[in-house]
Length: 400
Image 1 (cartoon, rainbow, N blue to C red):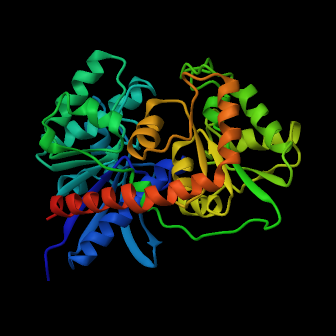
Image 2: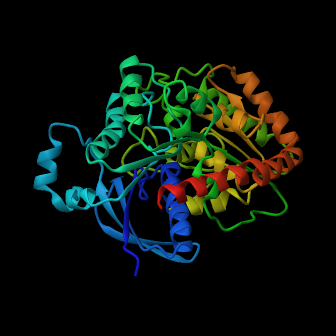
């Protein structure tokens, strides 16, 4: 019997009500499981930075996977040693000390400072903590930056220099990162959520089913409630215009598809905004269920005929299930992935385009949805497959 290896998957919370973050945990788990099972290598998984601290299990592609959780915290905060000592079941220091490999996904886009200092420091802390322990570390494909504060940028790249590999999920992040790190450890690959399993669905056959994801975070002006992301558009007015446009189209059924569904954070809640819109403005729309997992969300999205939205992983769910999609970018992570890496030009940039330009882009994309579907299938069969194969090989080498 081969010795069991212990793997920490960091900042990929499987319970996160932001289903994009949860999608990263499910996808990373799928990749690791497939690779190690093919090698007959026993392993143990720990989600580090989770919102729970229980032992648990899940089933993905019919495979039962056991794992445990270490609760999220800033590991370099002065209170961290006290927490480790007082709450061993919650933070699991002994378990963390025995890990062999660290696979860090940074919640996809949180190794940046666009979400504030607290999140940046928390995401940074695990990299420094595991470097102090001498652990092998790899960053799974993610957005690197942006860092508006030069101090944050310097801290981030000092931490990354100690890692074994840094995988970027888009060209912008890659070109930015190789300015600061040795090229032999940096690779431009693809978001792991492209490999999230799903069950294909079909919605009403006699309708053109259009999915619209409304970001609760953008609807509420960001965490600051004052256009935190410096959008050029008026997001609320734009959403109302988009809904009015699709409602005016013949034979269209609108689905409001939520991808962030927290129980206790109304600022981020897509579902609450969707219900508000249905109840007060557009009563004929269908509001999607509050999905229990990213696999449920992707399965629902797979049955649509067209999709648009501002949650990037909702757009990835559409793209990777061959649904014509018009992403609505609020940060550079969108263009880096869709425009540059995937060579997919159908999308709007709310930082630089106005309401009318975005609405016209959505209209053009909707009218061209058959052509977009063909383009997406081509990109999935070429770019995504090729980068996915490299990702699996590099990850396999890392875990060897």
